[in-house]
Image (cartoon, rainbow, N blue to C red; front, side, top):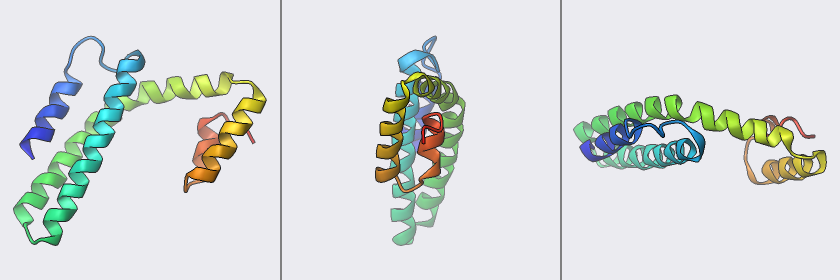
Length: 116
């Protein structure tokens, strides 16, 4: 689990693009994917009785979540503003699509500026 932790550290401390513009969104996306992979690894190790590896994976996931929280706020806020600026018919269509495809009906409408 050292490699994902090191990768997350390098992503977060990668220089002046951290959290700005599309690079910040890409950073958040990479961290999100790493979190999913590490959580899957933790579950796999736990299912096979590898307690030490499972605990290391959980610890790594905690570090990745902290990095994600510090990285994702700005890109998510920018996407929210962009969504609120869309014309009403486009917002409504996007909100309907999101509600249809995502399991949580309230969050997509909120992210798209309550376009219902």
